[in-house]
Length: 166
Image (tube, rainbow, N blue to C red; front, side):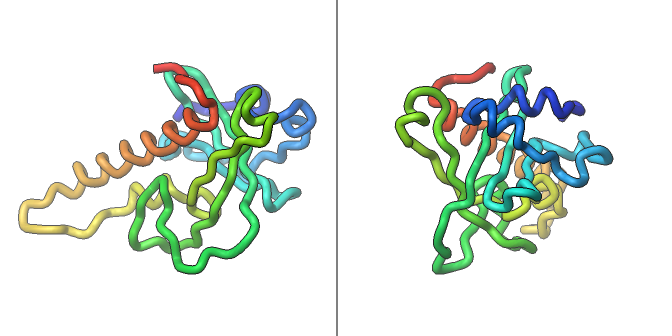
C-alpha cells in the first residue's frame, strides 16, 4: 500500500457524513507505519472506541469505510472473516458498516467479523506451519496475503453497493 495522508483518508470515506469525517481520529501509530506491510489501513478511533475505519486501495482509488462495533457478545471464539487465521493471537469483534448512499441513509448495513485491532496484515504474513514435505511456505504466505486483500476489498465493495474500480 502506498503512503496516504489525513486528507486522503477523510475524502475516501464513502459511508460517513461530513461531521463524521471531521471527527475522525487517526491511529496513534500513523506516522511511522510500514506501508509496504499494509494491505489496508484499519483502526479503532481512540476517542470513540466503538467506531473504526478501514481504508484500502481499489482499482487505483483509495476507498474508506466507517464501521461501528456491534452490541452484544459472541458466544464462541469466532474466526476473522478477513485473514481467516485459525491461530489468532488476538480477539475478533463483529463490526457493522452503514451502506453508502441512499440505502445506508435508510438504515441498511453490512456486518463482518474482524480482528479487534485490525491486525490482519500481520496475521496473514506470519509463517504458516509446514503442512507436508515440500510445502512451499512462501507461496502459502503469498496466497494468504492475496486472500486477505480480496476479503477486505469485497467487504468495501459490499458497503459501496456498486462496483468500484478494477
